[in-house]
Image (cartoon, rainbow, N blue to C red; front, side, top):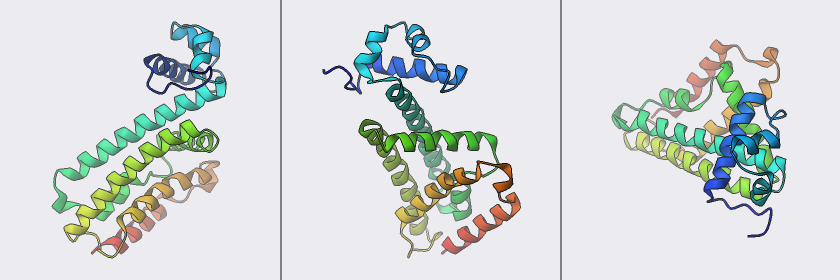
Amino acid sequence: MTRGMENTDSAIRLRLIDSTLFMIDRDGIDGARLKDIVEHANMTTGSLYWFFRNRRALINAALAERFVRKMRTLTNLVAEAFSKDADLVDPHLILKEIVVQPNQPDSVDARAERVQVLAAALEDPVLAKHVADIQRQLLTQISGIIKEAQINKVIRADVDPYSVAVMMQSTAIGLVGVDLARDLMPDIKAWNHLMDIVASALKA
């Protein structure tokens, strides 16, 4: 393997990523030092550079891995929430399960991290593939839920399930624009009212 080329299946690579995530959580992205990362992983700096071209590539890979893990968890939660009784699937519940509320602190942090990963993926083909793969899985999962609701005549049949899934994801990502300042946040009652209107438009 050429130095700096990523071995995406390596347990050593994953150990470095887990160590990087630990340091990011402890010290922040700017404070996560390569020396601390390799020491925590019980490895050498040479080993790190065998798997990653530079610090930025390592940070990007770590953030992407966290993104993938979170999206897998979300995919599983969505499947569990709506697989128990498809006859009772309500488009309001679908929207509120998927579309992140704008004023929840955890959601604000998650959106910021997600945008960082997406921005990095635009310049990193390996990262882009990881992110695209998990995004494809999530959109397929949501589309499947919407199709089930259409079969059960809960959601109108003339809407494209995949387009609805993308709309939900895009809304969540777009909220990053109002995360920049508290005065940009919409009134939560007004926001929920809008979500209700959109959900009502989807009803069969």
